[in-house]
Image (cartoon, rainbow, N blue to C red):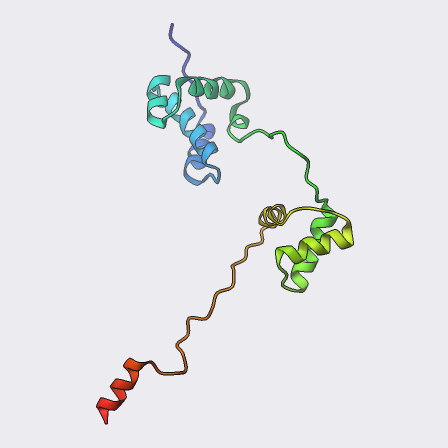
Length: 160
């Protein structure tokens, strides 16, 4: 029994190619590549071998494509606990961060004291990343010392 191949419109093909080249999520890029390969007439087994997944995963991607099209590419929402931070908490955090530089621990303690929200520093870091904040840890200066090293003294002695 031969399976009906996927037929793509020109706009669908262009959208899939854009996702493959510029998509931000690797899973979405891989799923788009799967659909393009199937549309080009490759078999499920060949696509599975090329992508390093089981053939059933390719069949499932094909079934989802037939059912919902482009909406089948991104990950679906997963179960889990709801966020402990509200939008008001996020805007409060943003205000504190922009007013003065604070560590995650200082932000957590201020959030607990003023808003009554208890979260871990790791959870706060993840939330700050989602909000678009990046930070670097502090480093010691790499400037040269004001005291000349022994090798520099030799050079000045030999020049005299």
